[in-house]
Amino acid sequence: MSAHNDSLPDYKGRFAPSPTGPLHLGSLYTALASFLQARSKQGQWFIRIDDLDTPRNIKGADSDILKTLETFGLCWDGEVFYQSQQLETYQAFIEQLTQEEKVYPCTCSRKTLAAFHSESNIYPQFCRDKTAIPAKPYALRLKTVSVNIGFEDFLQGRICHNIAEKDGDFIIKRKEGIIAYQFAVVIDDHLQQITEVVRGFDLLDCTPPQLYLHQLLNLKPPTYLHVPIITHQNGQKLSKQNLAQAVDCQNPAKTLFYLLTLLKQQPPLDLQQVSIDELLNWAIQNWQPLALKNTHALAAIE
Ligand SMILES: [Zn+2]
Image (cartoon, rainbow, N blue to C red; front, side):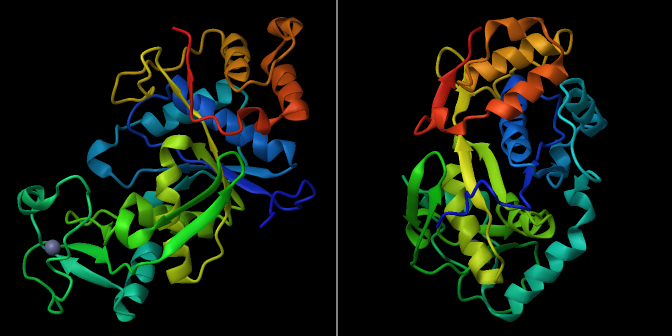
């Protein structure tokens, strides 16, 4: 598999933030990496707003994120794609899997499952043989089989795991009716014709079940490049959950220079004095993702 051909004519990449708060340094870093990868291949770069988890959405966060990306010169192609506008499409794919008897309804409560989950988070398949549609709210689970699914990550090498052992019968639609991330992302990448996914190392293990879904739905999968995550000095991932601060938009060129340093791109010191456009042009011309090969995490300077 060597889809990482430099002459790839129609490269399409994407960045998919959740509108659950302002963009923090960790997400801007991932956005920058996927932007540089796309632009260095003369490809297109799309924005997808990951807004399916409605209770967590914050009103106005989407436009706030887009404004921040613009401030940093990360201009995207085409219309912004909103997951919340694709519900009918997700449902059509769910119906396909239902007809093929590849999913089943699960009514297990969190409490019931908590009693059975020990070290692994694998669902004990209590509802697997259910055929009737339950009267109470239910989640939809995928009837997974024991199969090894692997792929070649551009930075992390060969990744492979057994779907039944590692993921089990995972949920594709939650009890509240919300489409699960794992499912939506596969459909979205298909709809946007994404050729390569650039995202954080923390999502590496999500890739085999996503590729499994690609197989079940007969969709052509993208290739993958998982960049190291950035962490606080204590090793904790920068995330909204551990209160990473919103990106400081006061001096975008300074922040960009810093992010390029974190991405091990070694920007020359005289680029500290230039505009964001000049800095981004340099970064596109000189983008060397392999500087991050086999790296899982990078500590940010605080
Ligand atoms: Zn169940």
